[in-house]
Amino acid sequence: MPHRLLRTALCGLLLVTGCAAGGPSGSPSPPAADSTSGVGDPLFPLAGNGGYDVTHYGLDLAYDPATGLLRGTARITARAARALPAFDLDLSGLTVGGVTVDGAAADSSRAGTELTVRPAAAVAAGARFVTVVEYSGVPGVIKDADGSHEGWIRTDDGAVALGEPLGSMTWFPGNNHPSDKAAYDIAVTVPEGLTAVSNGEPAGTATAGGRSTFRWHSAEPMASYLATVAIGEFRVTRATTASGLPVYVAVDPREAADTGVLREIPRILEWESGLFGPYPFSSAGAIVDRVDDDAVDYALETQTKPVFPADARGTTLDGPTLVHEMAHQWFGNSVTPRTWQDMWLNEGFATYAEWLWDEQHGGDSAQRHFDAAYQDDAQWAFPPADPGRPEHLSDEPVYGRGAMVLHKVRQAVGDLRFFALLRGWAVEHRGGNVDSARFTAWCEQRTGVDLKDLFARWLYGDGRPPA
Image (cartoon, rainbow, N blue to C red):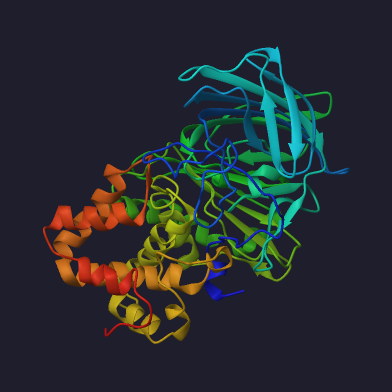
């Protein structure tokens, strides 16, 4: 696995056929699909579902670590983009016990990872509708072409859910494409003595009959791949940043000695807020969990609480990784790619944040980082805006060459305008979806500088251009 994958996971082509998942929404919307199955993503054409926009997920989960059994109720609130005599949700494995739409029983059928729902009466165009899915089973793990694992990852005392790019469909049905963002309320019931952590803010805990229920609320829009649940024994600490932002950190007690860097979260967030604008969510934090699976050796920028897996050899956590994952809260989580092809807008920005942190904290300059990346032959395998194939989605050009694009823009427009671009991009597109074309046009509009040749060479061009 390339070194960059140890910093941020972006799993490659699924080794599962017929993986339809996700849905269109956000601004702008993804390519229109001819049916309710698939939104025409350039790299994952079967990902996503057409015809509706999810606005809220209510997930009520119960998990038994001893058996691996998950029971769930998903209440999915959406708005129909057109009349829907039927529509699809994405669900991998698990058994569906029943489906209702607006309280009436609906027929459903399965084909691969497609769950097709046929309401008793067609949903009218423009109508708000609520779908409830009851399901259960032992959630699975998805093996990606790069050898990494995602989905519902069992641990020795619970589980952790990792969903990039498509693993969220292993533990809840939904519209599994980054263009359809929604609010979430997640409740998780586990044996008493364990803790369940998820995105957003705590919304109450109750214990009865030897079981504890933990409730979590995420009001800001979130892509399905950024949703997480971590279940197990955790040492929980709470802090606040200088601006009053709550920070919730959950660490497997076995890893506590190796996670002192997490105390830097408030300082890192204050620094990144100064560069990128106000922190885009209502809370922050992190999860460090023991995962004895060699194929889960990556950190993931799950919204508000990045996950840093650990094993007996140590964690995926260090200072640069923490800066990287926290930068994703702006670039990727708040400002989310329209399609998977646009992931350099996540990874290039987060990598450049590492370079800037180093530059402004007594380390190497961004130029020295650029020079080192420029000499790396792996960076020139393909243009960052066109990985070409899903298995290349987490390769070096998406990260390092993506950061080089930003450094070349900085050189072309000067520091004053460049740092205004960084901040403006995150602030003006907060909560939305973007693509490469939007970014390049926006840079020229904001600076008045002709950057077409720069982007043609560095973002879209083949081979290594003159530095």
